[in-house]
Image 1: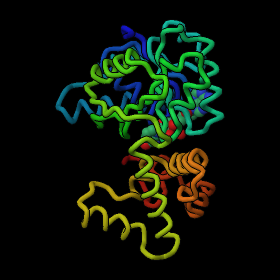
Image 2: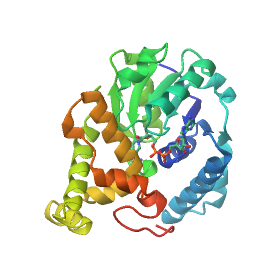
Image 3: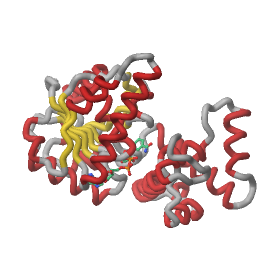
Length: 288
Ligand SMILES: NC(=O)c1ccc[n+]([C@@H]2O[C@H](COP(=O)([O-])OP(=O)(O)OC[C@H]3O[C@@H](n4cnc5c(N)ncnc54)[C@H](O)[C@@H]3O)[C@@H](O)[C@H]2O)c1
């Protein structure tokens, strides 16, 4: 099992920001990598605000605390600092080409013992292991959104994932006070094989005029006592991420039951990506 000091987080979007915050709060040295300084600057502001807000909710004077957390994170667009990384959490866009490009960089810069934790919605962990020279060190780490508020992580054992890698993943998550549910590899794992079909079918119902988005979600919240309906969940995840994930499932299983809804495609083309763009099935103010 690797001793963990330096955690690299790749991708500073919805998930990467949350993972970087949690890792820094757990006391790790963190390097956050993305392709543009605009994204990284936004990530820095988001993390500072989230730490401050969480502190206020707990009644702690947390302004200094927020600066302490930011201090632990190094923001960069290059991979040089990863030469002594112990564990990488990769959270880039759910696109095979983008992921492949990133693993090319990681293979060049990370030390051989470094563990790669793949945060993906639907890509097989065995497939990711196959594009590296260290498949035993590759594990799925499917965080839930928002990362700082979710205590359980779906962890996926790829075909070659070693017991030592599982122990390292467990130690990392425990340090962040998160529990893991360990499952075997399959595209979409447990969570998204079920969730993506549900969301896709909910979108089809809206498209066919069977019900409005509000009505679909109300059935789930009021009748099934779910905390959130499938369409609000989709808005929170990001409709682009939903579309890429269902496309991934369609491609990997070669099964038409994963055919993406045409309304979902149209909304993504129109830039209606959900909460992150301000509008999806529902509208959001920037303060939410
Ligand atoms: N959004 C969710 O609720 C959720 C939940 C669990 C897992 N995931 C998975 O986590 C991953 C990230 O999702 P997200 O919602 O944070 O996406 P996002 O679109 O919010 O962020 C992706 C980030 O990756 C960056 N990126 C793209 N190519 C890159 C590259 N070559 N190098 C470095 N950075 C690059 C982008 O600039 C962007 O900041 C995806 O694989 C997604 O399926 C998402």
